[in-house]
Image (cartoon, rainbow, N blue to C red):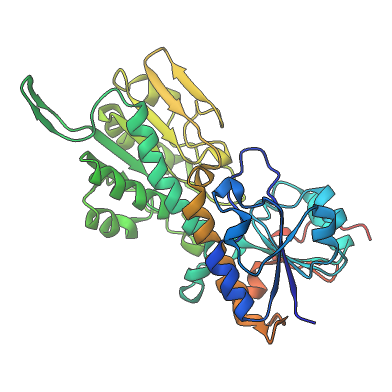
Length: 376
């Protein structure tokens, strides 16, 4: 029997992405996979059921889950969804294990193998599977558009009959995938762009996109491509230099986030109070609490009736077509090497699989989350 893949409807409010798109569905079918999808699961991403040729459309999640060997999802499964899954199934998606030990326990109790997309290692071979990066690119792009929309000024320089309009000054904090995309987008819109990251290795990348790199004298390269935590002295030195650049900016885009950990507080209340009237902060690190002390995740704050602090959540979902296309390809690139003649055979010696496996055979496999007590 070929493996049966299930694509459920995402039930988290506001989630518009889906874990499959028509092109990937066809590629899976060619590998011998029987693809099943819940009715209307892709409508929020503007893919009608009719676009999925050869895919079996299932009316209810109960029917979909009970016969599924493999499940592709975007958001972590709820307790109710896990209860509908058959024992020993394989689920692939964002798991957010740091948010729910109860979910991990439930997965173990049903001996479900969970592959967490946020745990895919950042190595060269896994770049095509890196969903964090594909979705962060969308966030960086959208973040600048949000900033331009909220800003009180034009981004590009304009020559008009009334005189010349100076270009906006944009500061991007954090030069990961989201930050680099933000730099590129702000430059395309005609702004003067500065960029900062505690990892000095990003200087060349920022400058290649047309940004002036802000050097605070703090270097904090860490493991896995992320920055290490700064000392108190380093934080003070960072804030002293950044404060001047923040105060001169029309729009500040912050992107410094580490999956599973609180976002570092980089912009203080005092720094915000010294910003120019009408300035905007778009905090793309809001999922982890935000890079600004005044950020309220999911809300737009009007500080002193003159500074706007925007804390958007699930930004990638705002561009559901391309977000779903890229995410579905990430899933396919992760799983397809282990599909032989329609059957899924995971190689536990493979570095990518070994690293991103959260649970398997009733045990927590990820070293980062083995602290979870599992009641069998």
